[in-house]
Image 1: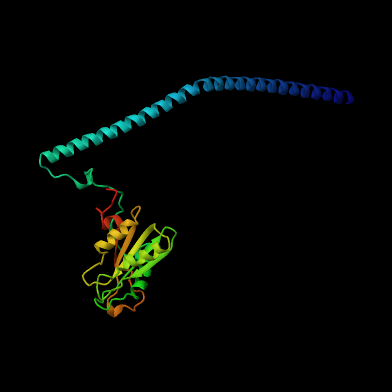
Image 2: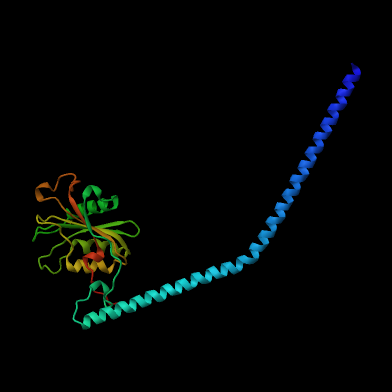
Length: 264
């Protein structure tokens, strides 16, 4: 019995030794395969690094040539357009104002109408400030109250009302009153405005003088919200503008598309 036990132990020992040897050989094979893969990866990386600069240069050159070609194409299209317009004028055809080389064509915001409930928070705040200023209007001769408000680039709102005078000419409009406040405090850049007045037939937009005055400080186009104030019998109602009331959203450039400028 003891001999059988010893024989079984030697058998198990031999079996373990064989398993260990197999594991060592398998590990050695895997290590060799891994080294081969590393060598191949390094070789391919070297090839790629030697080819990359030439490929990058070629790609950059193609990009540069494409940009030059696009620029030439735009110039060519512009010249062809100018020739076509001049030929149309020679032939007596009417030219499009939007294509005239003698007029500036600044980027203009879209004009639209929307219900008061759909006006953004910035626009609603300006309209409410204009309504508040309108209550202070000095209009003993026309009794036509106007309120205006403009938001400066720093976010401050400047509001104003129309101020009449017995001699008429010294009077001041609400828009110029509001902007004058801001300008006197060093604010010359504005991002939005609003004008409110009551007229039974429709919106009251800024007069021509005020449009030119607004344009002076519109370094880029900005929205101007126009709304009808409540009629005299509802002036004390809260809210003054109902959610379903229509609001005109125009802009400084749309109000005076061909403004006077010393630069043109």
